[in-house]
Image (cartoon, rainbow over all chains, first blue to last red; front, side, top):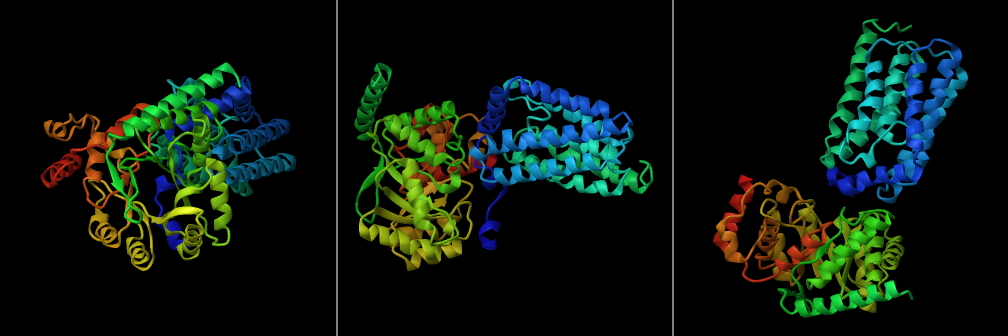
Length: 221
Length: 299
């Protein structure tokens, strides 16, 4: 059994063409328009709220993130992605789990955000860079709360702004990081340029965050 | 039936009639087990036909199938591993109104031997064909369980040919052992100017054992044609009537005497027709095959 799976290469796990992959985003945007504008605005609102220090602002950030993960789990992975990728239901489950964890953290409270560190840059890139990755195929634009990559990147950025301030917040990091890895490898196999930021930005940002944290530069306690 | 649908079916029937006429000029190869001749170029569906339930994309794939049949093609190959490809083929065949001269080749790809017949029946339903012409054990997955099932189906008359597949050179030793010990009609392997491992033992063994050979990854999933894109077609390509690198690569595969049919995949109807046009003499000789290998290596 193991021998069977080890005999496959990266491209064997990507059973669709780049055109079909990009078409998923086009169809999702078409079917839910103008909701993608609202989900992107919700991401921007979450980033602005993360700069505040009031308890309701922090809870609102986590709830907005939870809603985005839940929506992407359903509207993208189950409703679109599953039609071409047998792994999509597993991705949907991981996104739903992340939504539950974020909602539980919102209910628990006690989180604070800091505008210092790489998280700010990553969250800003997720909001501003990802919609610009496809200037030609603009119908296939990927935005926070509708497409999985910018959702994971923005979430990771915001969580890195908070994670150093409460040690247990690390449990929110694996799913966004693993998704960026899985998606980045898919984009790599499809030879799409978005593979570079999807793989490099989250991993580099997390490494920088971890080094800052170990040097006590992010206010960890 | 609406006028539009009736006219579409009429156009499809006319197209298939043209296809049958053109098939007379297409290079064919004989399946050793029966002597049946099939066109030497088929249609693969990995990645290209996995378009989900998007009607526009499914229609685009049906257009590819139309162009393929119109140019005299017959063999279409798929697998349960290929996502929605089987349903897309079924959509295309239904759009042609049941008159397509398809040689239906599919695979069984599941770890449980007991689940094999159920998967095969599901595949057949998706294709919408009364029976498969060829079923292959995909990448030797659970072949000990599936091969008896396929041989029993053949004995019962619900299947015409039995085969096994591999790709990218994986598990060639085990592949060779199955070829030696079992009465296979077909094998499917990767073969192109870069991936030539099959030449050493697999292809000669297929000739010795009287097995038809399907060739996958003729273009290395498009990597070879993309690499050759900026390279002008050499003058010698004219000697084998090639107008594109894709045709050169296909004729390279077909020029091996063991090869029965190459099964390139495409998303474009014009490319399907161009691929079918490669199923024609003349084919490269040994000297020209070396030049093709050198040109591909230099790209």
